[in-house]
Image (cartoon, rainbow, N blue to C red; front, side, top):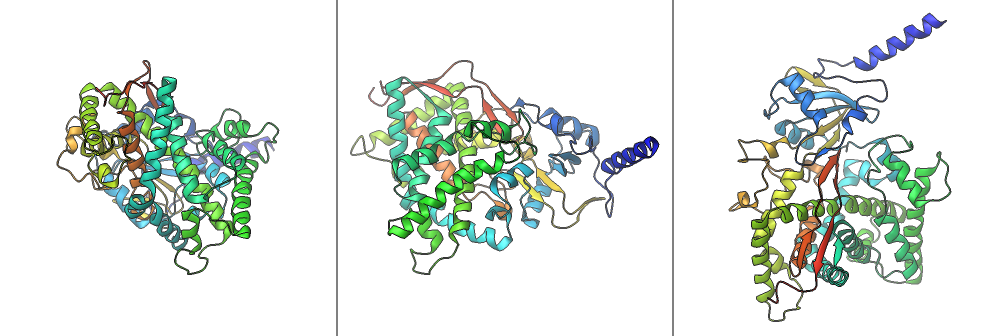
Length: 487
């Protein structure tokens, strides 16, 4: 019996490390069954470098990390079989050919099996079109920039009175305050406070590991939200709490005839008198996902951008000149920003693009293959997760001195482009981030108001990265009410 058990174990390990396929698998290793190479993959690293995990494997299997072609390998992460690619052409091809997002099991557990992001191409296309009405250029111009500007001004003034502000936390407050109003309309104070608390303190790393084990992001996040919990239903309870509050607000407002936010009007088709285009349940699920994803990304990118600016005096000086010019060019000094003001921030856009380029050391194309895919002599099997990294951002043939933070490299280029063959910070294909322009606009407005004051990043701030997250080691800014513009 012992011998038979050992034979079965060895056979299971062998099958795990040598997956079956209709062709030749890409080179790579699968690690231990179930765990794979997840723990090695998770090791934190410098935000301006690709992880040692990726570098070691590319050098092992392809000998040249600087090559931008045929640099992909197989591995096992989060309990799934995966392909990691540094090949830009392959990444773009995969983004166009596959529409199913590659997500970890913890994401599915928190967002729900029926979440619209994980459904059919038609469902995803439908919600993208709805979101674009709010977050596309026309929606930003007519609906969003005024609110973002007012909130940024308010929180910056508060920070100046206190003498400091946390970039990530302040950005999160602006994001949630703006989107909550546009999505939900006016809310009861207690409901708004509870909803903001859920979104703001949703712990980072909730998508990082597939098991609810002590020490993982999923476990920590749930422990913050709930004092009493059981390990079996911990994820479900967190999701249930948020969805219940959203659902109650929507149903109460509709029953009483109160105005919902503009986004819900768009979702339900009431703005055009077409009747409902989505059920209340699906709409609430979508809003839940929408807020969580937005709050996980933009504040962290902005914190890293402010850090880069602080570390480069010439960049800071040029930004100061640009934003002083915008303020002084207004008839009323305290007048709000307009869409034209935002579009005139040319150097600010260059800084944002350079920041997006240089911090994109995480996968920006995540897909699950819908069918077998042939790449040269190799076959990537259907059902595997594809993780495409924007290695092109650090290719010396495309970017001179690629690891240097140099916004001037964007001079004369199309600053409005959010994806190209050499720039892919927001993904590509049918899953291209629909909120890309909104994120860039929020960052630009934040930077504008920051430069109305004297400020400096607290010393000792560093940036490290683990998987898809950046971790600025503190994002506090010392800020003074003694404004630069007045001088």
